Image (cartoon, rainbow, N blue to C red; front, side, top):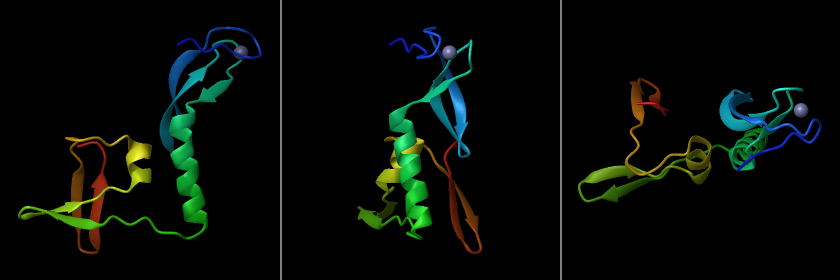
Length: 104
Ligand SMILES: [Zn+2]
C-alpha cells in the first residue's frame, strides 16, 4: 500500500520513528519530512499514557497450565509490543521483583 504525502503528493517512505520513547512504524515524506504514524501502533501507546495519567497500574494475572504457572500478558502490552505465541521474553530477577524485556 502506498502512502502519499498530503502536502507534496510525494510517495512516503516507511520508517521506524520514536513516539514518546516507543519505536513505532510510520511513513515519512522524503521532501517535507511530514510523518504519519500507524494508527494501530499509536492507539495502545496513547491508551497506556492515559492509564498512567489516571494512576491505573497495569497488572498481569498468574494462571495455571498443568504444573506450570503462566503469566497472562495484558492486552495493552500485547498490542504495544506485538507479543505473539512463542515469543521469548527475557526475565530479569531482581530483589524487588521481575522485570520483563521484550527482545530476548
Ligand atoms: Zn511532503
